[in-house]
Image 1: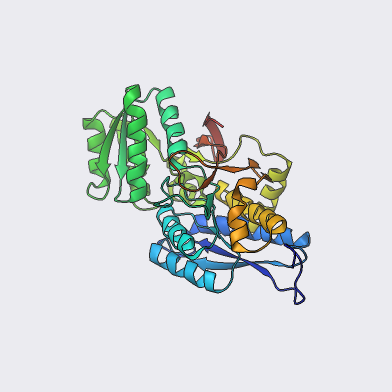
Image 2: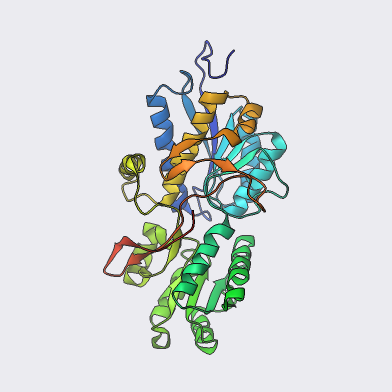
Length: 367
């Protein structure tokens, strides 16, 4: 049968999807990611599917658990999915990528940014989200341009947070910046405030979970008159989601974070943004656009190269797809062991204090 031909039974082409849908996973991010995946699948099927075959999403909840994700990958591989998509949490995506690679299952990672997505280079895994080093260096450049040299980071134990701290330190130190680590697992919010004063920090970055302990730390800092001039930042993107604004109100404004959207969406992005808003009942985050682009890329590969897993794996370097946020192509990038889109647009934005539902673009990263 030629690639993309329709079998006699018209059986669906299945894509496995990993999404955090229950705690302790970031459920709101998972909901946006799933909405993007589902809107794209619907559009693919409305346009005739994959060579006349319907595209079907087989969703599994990871709950931010690497072991649960690895088990889901094994199950999905056994169900015959052509490829794997999704995941938001970097440590979970890393476990999924390792299992997918071992099983020969192509995996397009939607949202996880940890540079070391795999221990060794592999041809089976590709990624849409920018590598953490690329995005967080952009954030560090924003801090320097804004005049910040003494930057405290409130952190929790995590490979992801440790990697972020290292990236910031390595980028800031040669440029006169200092990173001051504060252990949010040990220090209550009041002690974080005292440490910021004692160490003469001008910025505090939240490298911690949301809502705990991020929300109590923000509230404590905002209410401390000694810290009226300090910048609070959240490079991992916690303020992107509506729960941040609902939890903190005005206190959650003016907290710069990384977002992977262009300043202005083109016609495709605008149309998809409308569909996502209708699906979600609220403004879509960049994570929803990542989900949509994931299925768009995989559908193009399935139409062009067929549904055989080895053929999909071999086709990453030939991707040339118009996504919601720009032209998507994959390449090999030094220090990154997977096929990488280099690069999605990167912005530093915050919520406008005058209208917290509106975002302000503060800094734009290199293309």
